[in-house]
Image 1 (cartoon, one colour):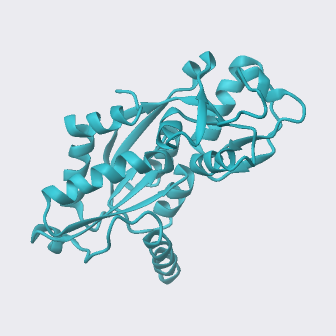
Image 2 (tube, rainbow, N blue to C red; image 1 turned 180 degrees about the vertical axis):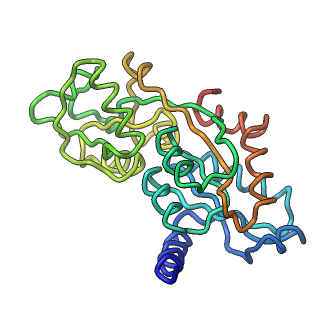
Length: 258
């Protein structure tokens, strides 16, 4: 128990420095009194959309602060199963969510709230002259992919296998934002990222659609964490994500309705 508590404390400190909207007091009692902190663990690809939803949530809940921990879904799932305090978990695929549910860390049934698909990201000047998925196997082309245990890496493998394309990546990254950064900085000639990430890059990279992406569409589930410190706020935030406002923000960011 002491070891689990120590791990949880360490993970909370790590989460506190990753993707905060604002800090604030925590606890269910504070939430009921019109204040408190809601802690949301969410896939890196949700960064822009969930940050916008977090601000809307704060506006509708005076005194409440939403704190986000954005990262690779598999890493977030591991943190939750190891005891990191969280109220809500939003994953980029059902398989990662299943690890949390199987560990007894999900309260209720996870619900799919949006979908996303891959595109090829290239630098604005496209030095590798990439036009289709098959070009990623070209000798000498530097390709960045997500690690295979991360949803974007799993989706990339599915799409590449469907196309019969073999790629030896120059790097495997911890999440989709890291792949996007590599491409945007010109450290990779191409990478497989989500359509939404290219849109959020504001012209720093160019996205290339490819038909095999239809075989690797990711469903995104969301759930309240079983031991949520602020369960009432967690339910309210999930309602926002699942409702019309959430759908409008997500589709506006390039996600697809489930």
